Length: 172
Image (cartoon, rainbow, N blue to C red; front, top):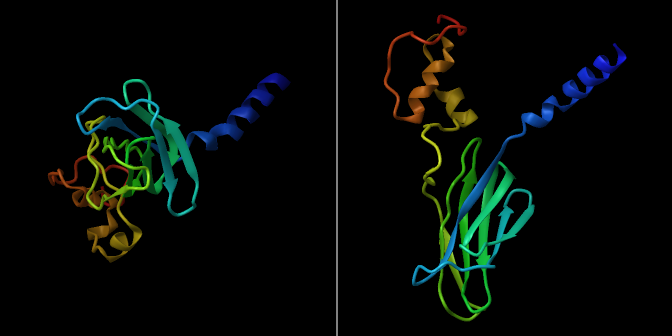
């Protein structure tokens, strides 16, 4: 009986670990001819906190920066003999796994290619459509009966279908 209580206490205490909001950045590092660049240094810096995560690209040029906390990032890719590639404006959200492919140009190490990514990144890994609605937009939006399901229309690719599937919400 005591063993069951200890196991239950450990499971309850670790439940918060499963709810961590993380994402990842992945991609391929190539040169200007399209050949894979192995052992390139890939560094992601969370611009809000300054936290840095680094990996090196594999023999096939692929890299994965896994378990990154959500938020805005700056990606920097460098290798001896190539110009340094910098991309800002990468915003990780819950359950997004953007693919950022990098093409390095031959050049001096002192040269830097700066790319600003203000457009939304395309998720090539999943088939779901989703969006994070900012708190300010939620507060300013007139919701009929305060039904939160109506916020789905803001994400796009949604067709209004009446009240089906709104069980559990007020008026649903």
